[in-house]
Length: 375
Image (cartoon, helix red, strand yellow):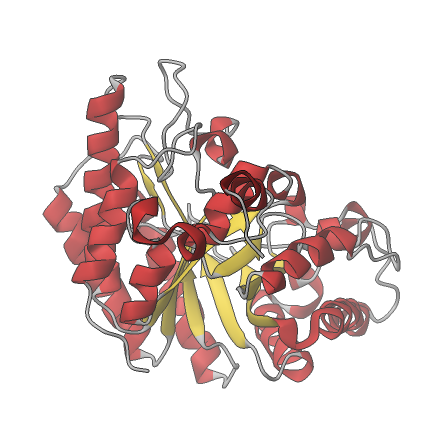
């Protein structure tokens, strides 16, 4: 049967055919997932069900990525906004599409530590006369429900997300830590994840950075990981969220100094026998010029410096973006670290018309320059 060019383009827009398979080398630059496969690096993106329904964005992700993580659909407050009532349908929709594309699936996340991100009913739950036992029961029920539902489809879980207070380096408090102890609750979460997802990679995920403003955060994450390892908890990897760029007003130090601090941090993490993942990559451009050309060059330079260091560790085998195109980025509406000139950010590899930017080239160059991963 002969397929017309019009039908091919319609199928591409619907996400039914991957672009490179149809158009070959003339489609443009080699897809990131192809570059990554050559080096042993998976390439992924966070996407939500609403984003998935955009045909152009869906086709872009199918072309560039071989891994997916749900934006919000896999979080506790989305899966179980009411006690005992799970809604897996949105996550199932995302994962079914990913499986149809042959993608790997990451789970994000089993518990998000800050109290404001737990379901309202969890924060208001009556823990009764045996609060520690009830806290463990709730965590067990949730972990079993999620891991049991998705089974072997999810190959890697962010078991605990953001347990360290960046301002102090101490562990955060929530209704579970108040009943179980902070370190004890994190350890229990990993043990439950291993019990109900014995096949999966178990990851601690956080947003520590290389700059001076993140020094206490880095130290707190290292202490948590050392403590978990010393207790025999089954943590296997550190998820580096990698929301790089400017996030606070601390401006001392040079790029080289930041790279040195980041390398010291990664040396200590990998020295514990832990793997690394870049789980939520984007670039906050709030302190770069308003001029689009200059800004895009600056974003690409920041990314290349960061990725060259992080990709130099062969323990890093996964690279996931938190949005691939500017108009799909959470940073457009995030009010904690906005651009003061009111301009929209340009934090992703593709613009709002899905055209590649210098950041995309920087990612590709960093992949091509990194050492080969072991098979």
